[in-house]
Image (cartoon, rainbow, N blue to C red; front, side):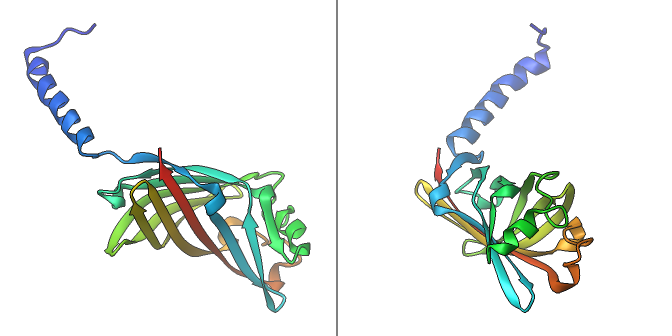
Length: 192
């Protein structure tokens, strides 16, 4: 064991007291479990004169929520690209293929919530990193976070330019599909 100096001996009780005080009053965000049956990750893109919608069916993540200071909440969500189901069905194979999401070479999309800036009334501006096809870009968007007892509900959405991630830029379909992709997220979680 390391030898304690007089300074260390005088600081340790204070540090221990501070740690107890902070943990007693919930100073650290708590891990919450995503309720997958009540949560969705959807996307939409305009193509060929209509809107094509999709939903990711296989994904998971970790959420840290601090009900006393929601701006300290964090989330990591990892989406299995192959789980995307598009409407119409014919769009699914094209979206997963090498010209677009390239699920074989890039099997996951990662979303990392970095910060929540309070806007009042349970509304925040979320700042996050989105990684798709091996490219990471920052995204910023409005997000609502409601906590009630042992439940939390996050809803929000953002749009990104698929060309920023190399999605569909070399496909023969590129000119027929708008570059703007809209993502809508609704996550329900429970404490513990």
